[in-house]
Length: 212
Image (cartoon, rainbow, N blue to C red; front, side, top):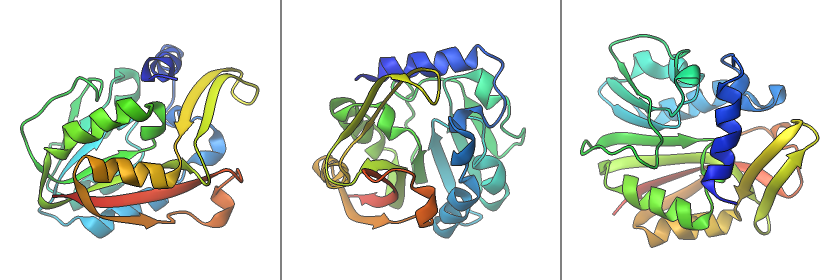
């Protein structure tokens, strides 16, 4: 599994007149009220944010007025058009693999995106954006991770009725990857109520870290 496989899935979705909830993949997976409340624990009105793979802004539209500035990076304009129009949010329609900035931020967020990169690819992404975390700033990664080992989804999904690709890496492995690229003070948060975790072999976690 490579990111190009997942990118093809979202490219197809973007071409089919998506609504703002389309990026949640399944109708039962919109936990963005919880996501927004979690992020707000780590910001204030003076905070700057870089949000990677912002989708349709389901999270950002709930928090933009509580921070100073947000750079929202989203590859597909068909999704980002739903992000609220405000001076506080700058939308960049670019893939996070190719986007570059020299700016540093109080908080970088990656919600629901890391499973679409394989292990080698995510190491590159984490290394790249570690340089954009301010001293004493934080990275928050929220995703679905393997409970005991990696869980790979690759091929046709009966539920989605299309090909779907994700690598839900073993949670300890993800933590070790972050350590390898220089992140410290790594903490796991069981972010959602138990009923939000549909599968026995994967679990949603938020990972918080700072860069050394």
